[in-house]
Image (cartoon, rainbow, N blue to C red):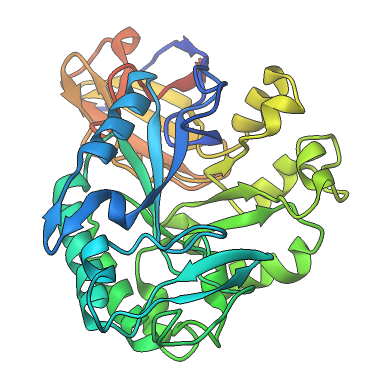
Length: 394
């Protein structure tokens, strides 16, 4: 006897930018109170949170995360130690040690301080700090992505400044230890590195191929620059063309020239290629675009946001004796990197939407459910007020 199935009708539209995706504003942007974004970005120095040996004050991070979540957004946080024209963020108790010696020099023509990576307490401090950070914030819905690294702006380089491996920049051995440490700590929250970590003179990846198997995502802080196809694309390829299927990709629109920002979202971009085209090519989930409200109307800003990340579309919906059977396709350029499940009538599918790649379909069943109108997507990684939508025209 054939299985009884009934094809169901359902119409839904996406009305919002989807969580974990889109163009990003800095957390202090005057434009941050908008539904055109779901993510806000912030740097954070180590000394903001580390107040002594194994002593931590999380209040600044808590305030940041709560503020962003109050706008129904999530945070991208980058920990950094070196920044042009600023002191390092090495904690004060380490700077006061008699054998800790920082380097002072110029970067981009400005006086800049560089950490003493030869000091064992600074190395120990960094590893211990991330253990506490992950124990407290892994799986925290307020934190969407964590970015880590070394050098200027934590972008894995000292292209302008006194570069000395083992002194102003950590040794490859310590970097290897650091990377494996992060990989063991972050089970839920995606952590990311700059694509500049591809540099074989600075980092251990070329010599230690097993590091490429770690679960880090990537960010590109000069996206759409003039030489992107030559320089940046090479670094992306180094880490593997298929990495986007399991770990997120993002970045920031280039600041190399005024034109890079002014025309970033123009029809042909600043250098002859449209933003959406390049974002699709690299399967991006997000892109920091803090200056764009000054160059483009928010309608264009929102349009560009919608071209990033995932977009779920139900292609078939059946009622069966066992429950609802859903065939869903990801119509956008990147997967969702958190578990999410179709649900109805208090029941969830056992099949997660995590990792559903661009253009692919997945079959999800909700046992015991029958009401298609109650269908929604449940995700425990969202802040209050957020939801993952789907479209349908059945």
